[in-house]
Length: 196
Image (cartoon, rainbow, N blue to C red; front, side, top):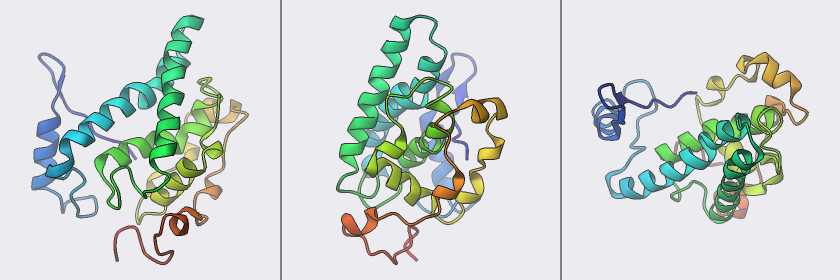
């Protein structure tokens, strides 16, 4: 799974509004129909996306490619602060903004699904694994089980050198198992994520 980000070539500005426009006009093409960037939540989604991108999605690379101890600490401490914050946030809700999957969840998922297999070992983001966070690991499992998502996750396609040297690598076989999280936050265990 990849998350598209558009840039204006002349000044390298991220064109979030254009992405939202394309998404709303073509919501039935490709991905499952749905509004993953609802108008009422856009400001909050943008705020969460900014934190997740800076400290987690990009934070793993900042830590992994740090050339000094100070640069590493500047990256890894906010990264785990964000993971701790997300763990608490997901204690009583299924997704970042309640019961509905949003763009922020998808952006977060793309890093979480690779975290233990790649980032924890090779990028030295190993204070804790996602497996050590009960809510984050169950949340990742829930999204993985969404119809069509598992087909986009292929640990064998991770760069083989990164995957093989990680002492904390995780098997994709763990993700299809049902999590207990659904019942603990009041979600009927038989209810599909897509509402069907």
